[in-house]
Amino acid sequence: MKVLIDDGLRIQLGTGIGNYCLYLYKSLKNRGCNVELSDYKATSKNRKLKRLQYMRYINSSQFRRKIEGYDIVHFAGQFLPMKKVKGVKYVVTVHDLTSFIHPETMSFFTALTSRLKIKRIMKNADAIVTVSNSVKKEMTEYFPRYSQKVTPIYPGNYDNIKKIDNMDQFDNENLKNVENNPFFLFVGTIEKRKNVGLIIDSFIKLKEKTKEAHNYKLVLAGRPGFGYEEFFKVAQESKFSQDIIFTGYTSNDDCSRLYCRAAAYIFPTVYEGFGSTQLECMYCHTPIILSDIPTNREISKNYGLFFSLESIDSLVEQMMVIVNGKYDYEKHNRLADEYLKNFDWDDIADEYVKLYEEIENKK
Image 1 (tube, rainbow, N blue to C red):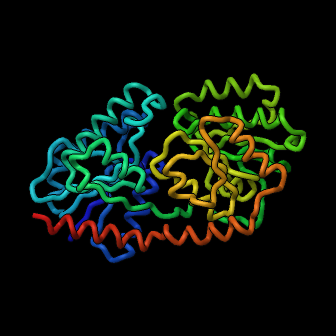
Image 2: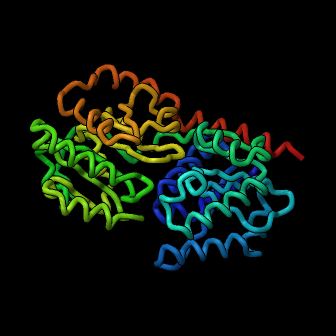
Protein backbone atom coordinates (compact mmCIF):
# COMPACT_ATOMS: atom_id res chain seq x y z
CA MET A 1 0.00 0.00 0.00
CA LYS A 2 1.47 3.31 -1.14
CA VAL A 3 0.17 6.52 0.43
CA LEU A 4 0.63 10.19 -0.47
CA ILE A 5 -0.04 12.85 2.16
CA ASP A 6 -1.10 16.08 0.43
CA ASP A 7 -0.88 18.96 2.90
CA GLY A 8 -2.86 21.50 0.86
CA LEU A 9 0.16 23.83 1.01
CA ARG A 10 -0.47 24.20 4.75
CA ILE A 11 3.10 23.35 5.75
CA GLN A 12 4.53 26.04 3.46
CA LEU A 13 1.96 28.55 4.76
CA GLY A 14 2.92 27.73 8.35
CA THR A 15 -0.55 26.94 9.71
CA GLY A 16 -1.75 24.69 12.52
CA ILE A 17 -3.13 22.30 9.92
CA GLY A 18 0.36 22.26 8.42
CA ASN A 19 1.65 20.95 11.74
CA TYR A 20 -0.98 18.21 11.65
CA CYS A 21 0.04 17.19 8.12
CA LEU A 22 3.75 17.09 8.92
CA TYR A 23 3.32 15.07 12.13
CA LEU A 24 0.93 12.66 10.42
CA TYR A 25 3.50 12.01 7.70
CA LYS A 26 6.36 11.54 10.17
CA SER A 27 4.39 9.24 12.45
CA LEU A 28 3.31 7.04 9.51
CA LYS A 29 6.90 6.93 8.28
CA ASN A 30 8.09 5.88 11.74
CA ARG A 31 5.55 3.07 11.67
CA GLY A 32 7.08 1.69 8.47
CA CYS A 33 4.25 2.83 6.22
CA ASN A 34 5.11 3.36 2.53
CA VAL A 35 4.17 7.03 2.64
CA GLU A 36 5.34 10.19 0.89
CA LEU A 37 4.65 13.87 1.52
CA SER A 38 3.61 16.19 -1.29
CA ASP A 39 6.63 18.18 -2.52
CA TYR A 40 4.71 20.95 -4.28
CA LYS A 41 5.86 24.49 -3.46
CA ALA A 42 4.00 27.59 -4.61
CA THR A 43 6.19 30.33 -6.04
CA SER A 44 4.09 33.40 -5.28
CA LYS A 45 4.92 35.49 -2.20
CA ASN A 46 1.26 36.40 -1.75
CA ARG A 47 -0.63 34.06 0.59
CA LYS A 48 -3.86 34.03 -1.43
CA LEU A 49 -2.05 33.60 -4.73
CA LYS A 50 -0.13 30.67 -3.27
CA ARG A 51 -3.41 28.90 -2.58
CA LEU A 52 -4.66 29.63 -6.07
CA GLN A 53 -1.47 28.15 -7.50
CA TYR A 54 -1.98 25.05 -5.37
CA MET A 55 -5.61 24.64 -6.46
CA ARG A 56 -4.55 24.89 -10.09
CA TYR A 57 -1.84 22.30 -9.48
CA ILE A 58 -4.04 19.61 -7.88
CA ASN A 59 -6.51 19.98 -10.76
CA SER A 60 -3.80 19.66 -13.41
CA SER A 61 -2.91 16.67 -15.59
CA GLN A 62 0.55 16.80 -13.99
CA PHE A 63 -0.93 16.05 -10.57
CA ARG A 64 -3.24 13.35 -11.91
CA ARG A 65 -0.28 11.57 -13.54
CA LYS A 66 1.67 11.84 -10.30
CA ILE A 67 -0.93 10.20 -8.07
CA GLU A 68 -1.59 7.30 -10.45
CA GLY A 69 1.28 5.55 -8.68
CA TYR A 70 -0.43 5.63 -5.28
CA ASP A 71 -3.12 3.49 -3.70
CA ILE A 72 -4.33 6.25 -1.37
CA VAL A 73 -4.00 10.01 -1.43
CA HIS A 74 -4.80 11.63 1.89
CA PHE A 75 -5.74 15.28 1.44
CA ALA A 76 -4.90 16.27 4.99
CA GLY A 77 -5.22 20.00 4.31
CA GLN A 78 -8.97 19.83 3.62
CA PHE A 79 -8.83 20.25 -0.19
CA LEU A 80 -9.99 17.89 -2.92
CA PRO A 81 -9.44 18.01 -6.73
CA MET A 82 -12.41 18.37 -9.06
CA LYS A 83 -11.68 15.05 -10.82
CA LYS A 84 -10.82 11.68 -9.33
CA VAL A 85 -8.15 9.35 -10.67
CA LYS A 86 -9.48 5.86 -11.29
CA GLY A 87 -8.10 3.25 -8.93
CA VAL A 88 -6.86 5.77 -6.35
CA LYS A 89 -8.74 6.12 -3.05
CA TYR A 90 -9.20 9.62 -1.62
CA VAL A 91 -9.12 10.26 2.14
CA VAL A 92 -9.80 13.81 3.37
CA THR A 93 -9.40 15.32 6.84
CA VAL A 94 -12.12 17.84 7.71
CA HIS A 95 -10.85 19.87 10.65
CA ASP A 96 -14.05 21.73 11.50
CA LEU A 97 -17.43 22.94 10.26
CA THR A 98 -17.00 26.59 11.19
CA SER A 99 -18.50 27.82 7.92
CA PHE A 100 -21.74 25.95 8.67
CA ILE A 101 -22.03 26.48 12.42
CA HIS A 102 -20.47 29.93 12.96
CA PRO A 103 -20.17 31.65 9.56
CA GLU A 104 -20.36 35.04 11.29
CA THR A 105 -16.78 34.55 12.47
CA MET A 106 -15.49 34.48 8.88
CA SER A 107 -15.67 36.76 5.88
CA PHE A 108 -18.67 36.06 3.62
CA PHE A 109 -16.49 34.80 0.76
CA THR A 110 -14.41 32.52 2.99
CA ALA A 111 -17.53 30.99 4.56
CA LEU A 112 -19.18 30.46 1.16
CA THR A 113 -16.17 28.77 -0.45
CA SER A 114 -15.60 26.63 2.64
CA ARG A 115 -19.20 25.34 2.59
CA LEU A 116 -18.97 24.48 -1.10
CA LYS A 117 -15.64 22.74 -0.56
CA ILE A 118 -16.91 20.61 2.33
CA LYS A 119 -20.06 19.61 0.42
CA ARG A 120 -17.84 18.32 -2.40
CA ILE A 121 -15.65 16.46 0.05
CA MET A 122 -18.62 14.72 1.66
CA LYS A 123 -19.87 13.57 -1.73
CA ASN A 124 -16.64 12.57 -3.44
CA ALA A 125 -14.17 11.38 -0.80
CA ASP A 126 -13.84 7.65 -0.16
CA ALA A 127 -13.24 8.27 3.53
CA ILE A 128 -13.39 11.34 5.77
CA VAL A 129 -11.41 11.85 8.96
CA THR A 130 -12.55 14.28 11.65
CA VAL A 131 -10.24 15.45 14.42
CA SER A 132 -12.77 14.89 17.22
CA ASN A 133 -15.97 13.04 18.00
CA SER A 134 -17.70 16.41 18.27
CA VAL A 135 -16.98 17.22 14.61
CA LYS A 136 -18.14 13.76 13.56
CA LYS A 137 -21.43 14.34 15.36
CA GLU A 138 -21.85 17.69 13.59
CA MET A 139 -21.12 16.10 10.22
CA THR A 140 -23.67 13.40 10.86
CA GLU A 141 -26.25 16.09 11.58
CA TYR A 142 -25.44 18.15 8.49
CA PHE A 143 -24.69 15.26 6.11
CA PRO A 144 -26.53 12.15 7.34
CA ARG A 145 -26.33 10.61 3.89
CA TYR A 146 -22.55 10.34 4.11
CA SER A 147 -22.12 9.64 7.83
CA GLN A 148 -20.82 6.10 7.19
CA LYS A 149 -17.73 7.60 5.57
CA VAL A 150 -16.68 9.51 8.68
CA THR A 151 -14.06 8.28 11.17
CA PRO A 152 -12.84 10.40 14.12
CA ILE A 153 -9.09 10.22 14.86
CA TYR A 154 -7.49 12.68 17.27
CA PRO A 155 -4.31 14.54 16.33
CA GLY A 156 -1.43 13.95 18.71
CA ASN A 157 0.49 16.38 20.85
CA TYR A 158 2.99 18.50 18.89
CA ASP A 159 6.45 19.17 20.29
CA ASN A 160 6.65 22.81 19.19
CA ILE A 161 6.17 23.85 22.81
CA LYS A 162 8.98 22.84 25.17
CA LYS A 163 9.22 22.76 28.94
CA ILE A 164 11.85 25.39 29.61
CA ASP A 165 13.63 25.31 32.98
CA ASN A 166 16.03 28.13 32.17
CA MET A 167 13.77 31.15 31.87
CA ASP A 168 15.80 33.30 29.49
CA GLN A 169 14.57 36.69 28.39
CA PHE A 170 12.03 36.88 25.60
CA ASP A 171 13.28 37.49 22.07
CA ASN A 172 10.19 39.50 21.12
CA GLU A 173 10.68 43.13 22.13
CA ASN A 174 6.95 43.49 22.85
CA LEU A 175 7.32 40.99 25.70
CA LYS A 176 9.96 42.85 27.68
CA ASN A 177 7.28 44.39 29.91
CA VAL A 178 5.91 41.04 31.14
CA GLU A 179 9.09 39.37 32.37
CA ASN A 180 8.46 40.28 36.01
CA ASN A 181 4.64 40.18 36.01
CA PRO A 182 2.04 37.40 36.19
CA PHE A 183 -0.01 37.29 33.01
CA PHE A 184 -2.92 35.63 31.28
CA LEU A 185 -2.09 34.24 27.85
CA PHE A 186 -3.65 33.61 24.47
CA VAL A 187 -1.64 32.26 21.51
CA GLY A 188 -3.08 32.08 18.01
CA THR A 189 -4.46 34.18 15.21
CA ILE A 190 -6.08 37.31 16.67
CA GLU A 191 -9.48 36.84 15.01
CA LYS A 192 -13.20 36.78 15.74
CA ARG A 193 -13.49 33.00 15.49
CA LYS A 194 -11.17 32.72 18.48
CA ASN A 195 -13.38 35.18 20.41
CA VAL A 196 -10.43 37.36 21.37
CA GLY A 197 -12.73 40.28 22.15
CA LEU A 198 -14.14 38.40 25.13
CA ILE A 199 -10.64 37.92 26.55
CA ILE A 200 -9.96 41.64 26.40
CA ASP A 201 -13.33 42.62 27.90
CA SER A 202 -12.94 40.09 30.72
CA PHE A 203 -9.41 41.18 31.52
CA ILE A 204 -10.52 44.82 31.76
CA LYS A 205 -13.41 43.83 34.04
CA LEU A 206 -11.08 41.73 36.20
CA LYS A 207 -8.70 44.67 36.65
CA GLU A 208 -11.60 46.92 37.59
CA LYS A 209 -13.06 44.37 40.01
CA THR A 210 -10.13 43.44 42.22
CA LYS A 211 -6.93 45.06 43.42
CA GLU A 212 -5.30 41.61 43.58
CA ALA A 213 -5.05 41.69 39.76
CA HIS A 214 -3.34 45.09 39.61
CA ASN A 215 0.02 43.63 38.49
CA TYR A 216 -1.45 41.14 36.00
CA LYS A 217 -1.02 41.60 32.26
CA LEU A 218 -2.70 40.07 29.23
CA VAL A 219 -0.53 38.70 26.41
CA LEU A 220 -2.14 38.13 23.00
CA ALA A 221 0.48 36.34 20.93
CA GLY A 222 -0.20 35.81 17.25
CA ARG A 223 -0.71 37.25 13.82
CA PRO A 224 -3.59 39.65 13.07
CA GLY A 225 -6.69 38.03 11.57
CA PHE A 226 -10.32 38.82 10.77
CA GLY A 227 -11.43 41.45 13.33
CA TYR A 228 -7.97 42.38 14.66
CA GLU A 229 -8.39 46.15 14.19
CA GLU A 230 -11.53 46.13 16.34
CA PHE A 231 -9.80 44.28 19.18
CA PHE A 232 -6.74 46.53 19.08
CA LYS A 233 -8.91 49.65 19.27
CA VAL A 234 -10.79 48.41 22.35
CA ALA A 235 -7.52 47.59 24.08
CA GLN A 236 -5.93 50.94 23.25
CA GLU A 237 -8.95 52.91 24.45
CA SER A 238 -8.96 51.08 27.80
CA LYS A 239 -7.34 52.62 30.87
CA PHE A 240 -5.40 49.34 31.12
CA SER A 241 -3.94 49.61 27.61
CA GLN A 242 -0.37 49.33 28.97
CA ASP A 243 -1.26 45.94 30.45
CA ILE A 244 -2.64 44.46 27.19
CA ILE A 245 0.19 43.31 24.95
CA PHE A 246 -0.14 42.35 21.27
CA THR A 247 3.05 40.54 20.28
CA GLY A 248 2.52 39.87 16.57
CA TYR A 249 4.34 36.79 15.28
CA THR A 250 6.02 34.91 18.13
CA SER A 251 8.79 32.32 17.78
CA ASN A 252 8.44 28.78 19.10
CA ASP A 253 11.02 29.54 21.80
CA ASP A 254 9.08 32.57 23.01
CA CYS A 255 5.82 30.60 22.88
CA SER A 256 7.43 27.96 25.09
CA ARG A 257 8.52 30.65 27.54
CA LEU A 258 5.02 32.10 27.53
CA TYR A 259 3.36 28.75 28.24
CA CYS A 260 5.78 27.95 31.06
CA ARG A 261 5.44 31.37 32.71
CA ALA A 262 1.74 32.11 32.19
CA ALA A 263 -0.52 32.28 35.23
CA ALA A 264 -3.19 30.75 32.99
CA TYR A 265 -4.06 30.33 29.33
CA ILE A 266 -7.46 31.64 28.18
CA PHE A 267 -9.13 29.71 25.35
CA PRO A 268 -12.51 31.40 24.71
CA THR A 269 -13.20 29.99 21.26
CA VAL A 270 -16.80 30.04 20.09
CA TYR A 271 -16.15 26.94 18.04
CA GLU A 272 -13.25 24.53 17.59
CA GLY A 273 -12.68 21.33 15.68
CA PHE A 274 -10.04 20.10 18.11
CA GLY A 275 -7.85 22.72 19.79
CA SER A 276 -4.25 21.50 20.12
CA THR A 277 -3.65 24.40 22.52
CA GLN A 278 -5.32 22.30 25.20
CA LEU A 279 -2.66 19.59 24.83
CA GLU A 280 0.12 22.17 24.94
CA CYS A 281 -1.24 23.51 28.21
CA MET A 282 -1.46 20.01 29.66
CA TYR A 283 2.10 19.27 28.58
CA CYS A 284 3.43 22.42 30.28
CA HIS A 285 1.04 22.07 33.25
CA THR A 286 -0.31 25.50 32.38
CA PRO A 287 -3.76 26.18 33.86
CA ILE A 288 -6.31 26.65 31.07
CA ILE A 289 -9.57 28.59 31.28
CA LEU A 290 -11.77 27.65 28.36
CA SER A 291 -15.21 28.04 26.86
CA ASP A 292 -17.77 25.40 27.73
CA ILE A 293 -18.31 23.96 24.24
CA PRO A 294 -18.50 20.25 23.28
CA THR A 295 -15.02 19.94 21.76
CA ASN A 296 -13.32 21.58 24.73
CA ARG A 297 -15.19 19.31 27.15
CA GLU A 298 -14.20 16.32 25.03
CA ILE A 299 -10.48 17.13 25.03
CA SER A 300 -9.79 18.86 28.37
CA LYS A 301 -12.32 17.00 30.50
CA ASN A 302 -11.63 17.81 34.18
CA TYR A 303 -8.33 19.52 33.49
CA GLY A 304 -9.91 22.75 32.31
CA LEU A 305 -11.63 25.56 34.16
CA PHE A 306 -14.77 26.09 32.08
CA PHE A 307 -16.86 29.22 31.67
CA SER A 308 -20.13 29.99 29.91
CA LEU A 309 -19.92 31.93 26.65
CA GLU A 310 -23.18 33.58 27.67
CA SER A 311 -21.61 35.35 30.65
CA ILE A 312 -18.51 37.50 30.85
CA ASP A 313 -18.76 37.20 34.65
CA SER A 314 -18.34 33.45 34.30
CA LEU A 315 -14.93 33.98 32.70
CA VAL A 316 -13.93 36.63 35.22
CA GLU A 317 -14.79 34.23 38.06
CA GLN A 318 -12.45 31.58 36.66
CA MET A 319 -9.70 34.17 36.26
CA MET A 320 -10.24 35.03 39.93
CA VAL A 321 -9.52 31.38 40.83
CA ILE A 322 -6.01 31.96 39.52
CA VAL A 323 -5.55 35.45 40.98
CA ASN A 324 -6.73 34.34 44.43
CA GLY A 325 -4.48 31.26 44.50
CA LYS A 326 -7.33 28.72 44.61
CA TYR A 327 -6.13 26.59 41.69
CA ASP A 328 -5.22 22.99 42.68
CA TYR A 329 -1.96 22.40 40.76
CA GLU A 330 -1.31 18.90 42.10
CA LYS A 331 -4.73 17.62 41.01
CA HIS A 332 -4.70 19.24 37.58
CA ASN A 333 -1.11 18.26 36.79
CA ARG A 334 -1.92 14.64 37.56
CA LEU A 335 -4.94 14.77 35.24
CA ALA A 336 -2.85 16.38 32.49
CA ASP A 337 -0.29 13.57 32.52
CA GLU A 338 -3.08 10.98 32.43
CA TYR A 339 -4.99 12.59 29.55
CA LEU A 340 -1.93 13.12 27.36
CA LYS A 341 -1.49 9.36 27.03
CA ASN A 342 -4.45 9.41 24.62
CA PHE A 343 -2.61 11.69 22.19
CA ASP A 344 0.51 9.73 21.26
CA TRP A 345 1.39 10.02 17.55
CA ASP A 346 2.62 6.42 17.29
CA ASP A 347 -0.72 5.07 18.47
CA ILE A 348 -2.53 7.53 16.20
CA ALA A 349 -0.50 6.35 13.21
CA ASP A 350 -1.79 2.83 13.83
CA GLU A 351 -5.36 4.11 13.59
CA TYR A 352 -4.61 5.69 10.22
CA VAL A 353 -2.96 2.55 8.88
CA LYS A 354 -6.05 0.58 9.87
CA LEU A 355 -8.29 3.10 8.09
CA TYR A 356 -6.16 3.07 4.94
CA GLU A 357 -6.22 -0.72 4.81
CA GLU A 358 -10.01 -0.76 5.16
CA ILE A 359 -10.40 1.78 2.35
CA GLU A 360 -7.92 0.02 0.07
CA ASN A 361 -9.76 -3.29 0.46
CA LYS A 362 -13.09 -1.76 -0.58
CA LYS A 363 -13.63 -2.37 -4.28
